[in-house]
Amino acid sequence: MAFSASVTEQAFVLKHIVGIEALSQHERFADATPDMVQAIVEGIGAFAEGEFAPLNRIGDTVGARLKDGKVVMPEGFVAAYKAYVANGWGSINAPSAFGGQGLPFSMATVALDSLGAANMAFALCPILSVGAIEAINHHGSDRQKQLFLPKLSTGEWSGTMNLTEPQAGSDVGALKSTATPRGDGTYQIKGTKIYISFGDHDMAENIVHLVLARTPDGPAGTKGISLFLVPKYQVAEDGSFTKANDIKVVSIEHKMGINASPTCVLAFGEEGECIGELIGPEFGGMRAMFTMMNNARLNVGLQGVQIAEAATQKAIWFARERVQSAKASGPSRESVAIVEHPDVRRMLLRMKAGTQAIRALLYLASGYVDRATLGEAGAQDMVDLLTPLAKTYGTDMGSEIASLGIQVHGGMGFVEETGAAQFYRDIRIAAIYEGTNGIQAADLVGRKLAMQGGDVIRNHLAAISQDASDQPGLSALSAACAEVTEYMLSATVDDRLAGSYAYTNMMSVVTAGWLMLKQLQAAQTEIDAGDTSAFLKAKIVACRYYLGVMVPEAFAFKGSAMAGADLLYALDAEDLAA
Image (cartoon, rainbow, N blue to C red; front, side):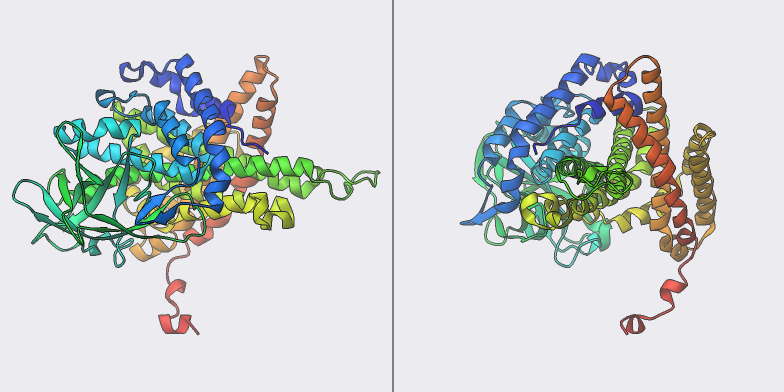
């Protein structure tokens, strides 16, 4: 089957969840007219179908390769990436002052949604560049912006983020890479970074590495970390290349999935000159990097949507084609397509409803990012609250839907040639990188729960309760979330963390359920106005399924959320291994 971009669904969610028409009323986003929005949704969909999707299979089976110390992408990738650049798809949300289109972040979200559903591993390259643009735009000097942002915005140059080291994973403060002043305002960078996605490739002219490192005599831990801009090729003031920095690709990882995304071990300055320049103030590295990471966390959550969409399309196609057994409830003993069997229908509808729920959640967050840039009151608080929900629930649900896709295929799903297994292998990393989902849950019950003394979450749940007054399941879940919220606010640190993942699930489902209710109401309004399209009929059923079946499941998390930490530590480490 051929991948088909979900343009009708995307346009519906942009309208009813993001509120794209209201955003376009602001001068900053005046170019996001209805015609422009529709053209982008349809255009990037067609591009994803025609350029990215056909490369998904070779990206998985051949993958990126290390040859003579350089990463070589599979056949077709370089041409497709150049087409991506030539068509301007990387510049949608980039600052207009530096050659970008300056359109809403929510429109860039749509673009990555389609590109990643067509080819998740390939689309990881633009995701990283988007994060690099954010960090430089917010924390870089005027010179750095003028020199690097135009090329990053078009995609002619790509970006990376370099945090992790062998001894410093989630504990970023343990990193040992160094930045020694050279006396001219630049620094000699030295150290080894691991797990660097697209740390090297042959698609872009230059690669702009953003590297966390320590300057001499800096304080221990995260307080002593600074962020440095370290390009693959040093850049003169006129934008031309002078010489290559000493950045060696030591190896690329052999991974479970996303094989077209080269995950590199990079050695900086081990054999020669590797010059970097400070981004932001000395010791301001974590603040600058979190600008990039927060952006990336939403886009990683979006990867769950991408895979969920692709896996759902493939499963529905297969279920309509695969003929097995007679339908149990009918008089005929003729075998039917498996889509007619109740349990297969259960899986397919769960996949469809789950995909729509996480798309709405990710798009809602992207809309608040746009509102925050406009200075709307409370918008940044909502971005902060929604980020751990979107990253965690988006990737978890994406993994579940990919697994269900394999199940729908039966034994054929376990066979690589069908392609169903690739979706599961690709998405499994998303719950791990850019801060594991456990770290996202800890962030929710730590920093985000404490916002305005808990009132940000209280007000969010109050809004859901008000809208869900005629939805008993959603209303009851909102009340349960409110109860757990008060428990969390008074619980010990260990007890909060012990229940953090369950609480994150409850908050994610109640928020997604609220968004599915909004879509149900919007779809019904359009039907009442005379639109009898199959899309709206399917939307109504998917929303009803999520509200009636998937929302009640979240009540099961309440006990875990409030169980406390005592039982977790009833065994010491030695007894736990018994």
